[in-house]
Image (cartoon, rainbow, N blue to C red):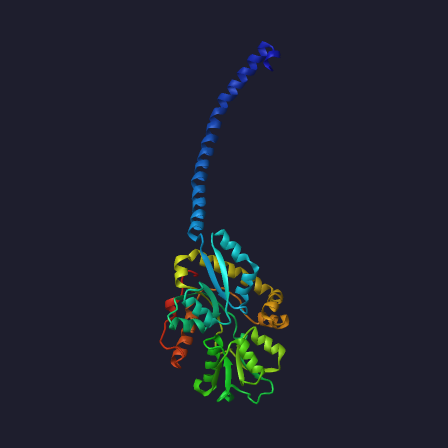
Length: 351
C-alpha cells in the first residue's frame, strides 16, 4: 500500500538502494550465521551430556537410602540432621537419608557390622575394636576435637588426689570408648597396670548416676557430659587427655556403601563440612540448639563447644600412625584380641 502513493522515480531509487544493501549485507550475514551455527552446535553438543550426566546420577542413586548413625552429643551430625540441608541435597541427587540414634560409639559400629547403618561418627577407640571384630568399615575423615574435651574426674571432696591413687578403685567409663584409651594411658603414665583398677563399664547416663550416688570412685568422660558435670556438681579433674591421648573423632563408613556410592559419600562429607564451619563460628547457637536435645544447660554446652577444635579432614600419615599406636596399646593389654593395621581401612578418596 505504501508504494501506491510514491512517484515512480522514487520507487526505483528506493528499490535500487534496497537491492544494493541486501547484496552488501549478505557477506556479513553469512559470517554471523556461520558463527551462530557453530555456537549452537557446541551448546547443543554440551547440553545433552550435562542433562544426561545429571539424569544418570539421579538414576544411579534413585531409591538409595543413606543410613546414618549418630549420637546426640555429636554436635555436627546432630546439627546436620536437624538443619535438614543434607536431606534436601540428597533428594536432588535422587537419594534420601534416615537417622538412627546411639548412646555411644561401640553399639553404633555394631550396627554398621550387621549392615544396619552406612555412616557414623565416633571417638578414636571404637573403630579399633570394630576393625578387630571384622566390621567392614573405612575411615573417611577425622575431626581434631581436643585433648581438653575428655578427662578423669572425682568428687571435689574425694581423698583421691592423683591418678596413681586410683589403684584398687572403681573407675567408670564406656568400654571401647575414647575415654577407655584415656584411662589406659593415664594409668600407665602413673606407673600402674590396667589390672590395678576396677573398670565399671557404663554409658554416660548410667555413669553419671553411679558417680553422683558414690557407687564409683572416678569417672572418665567426654564433652559435653564433662562440661555438664563440671557445671552442675563440685568435681575435680585428675587429668585430661593432654599428652596422653589425641582425643580425635572419626567419620566412618561401611565399605560396601563407599564402593557403591562414592559420589554420595562425597556429598555427605561436603554437607558435614558446611555444618562444621557453621558450628565453629556459632558456639552460642550450637549450645542453644543442643540444650533441649541433651537436657544439658546451654552455659555448659557453650563451654564444651569453645574448648573443642573443628574440622572434617582427610587422614594423614601422622594421624594413621597415632591411631595405630592406640590399636597396639589395646592389643598389648589384651583388650583387642588380635593385631590390626589401621592403614588397611583408610579411604583415599578424601585426599
